[in-house]
Image 1 (spheres, rainbow, N blue to C red):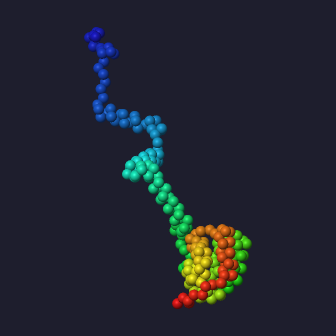
Image 2: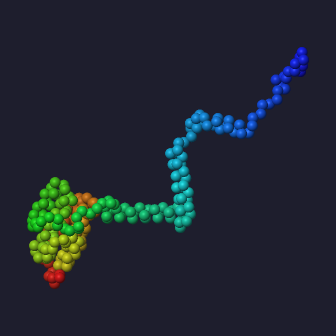
Image 3: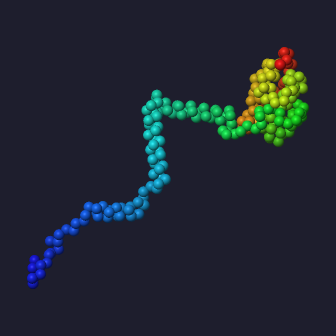
Amino acid sequence: MSTGGLITIADGDAPPLTTGREAAREAAERELAKPIYHQDEPGLFQRALDRFWEWLGEFFDRAAGATPGGGLGLLAIALVVVLAAAALWWRLGKPGRTARGDGTLFDDGPRSAADHRAAADTHAAAGRWNDAVRERMRAVVRSLEERTLLDPRPGRTADEAAAEASRSLPDHADGLRAAARAFDDVTYGGRTADPDTYARLRTLDLTLERTRPILTEPTP
């Protein structure tokens, strides 16, 4: 309307303000970048973890689809793998453990069977079962050497001694092999002996002392 020659525009007749598309986009980005809009969003680690679990779920879904029996078949395969790994761990000991020595039975100067037995009993009385098992196995082999059932030979391993002694003591071949395996387990395999293991070796030692051998041809 006009007043005194001046033209005024009523509030309701004012033209709307317009903003360019680019300017509106930048304004929206600035607004959305404010921390208040992101305070409840998961952090970088949480997002990465979510992506990992999502990938893992998709992987098992695909594996189950490709495995006979579906999910149950996949579970059976996983169980077999776990059991195989556990059996390998039990037999070989801790992975990465290096064997001490070169596998020979005796690692010091010659001692009599009685000396080894005394050392074994001392270790057993103190609860040092690994040392007790080692000394009792050495007593078994040294006793067989003293009885000329084995020829004294440096560098012989526990397995070799058990195999050679089994020729003249066939009824105790299983016990000799078990004794050699116990010696290797505690000496090179990282296993821990117990009172039962030592008791079996001690019984074998005393039994062999009373056993008459079967005479065989000398081993070249």
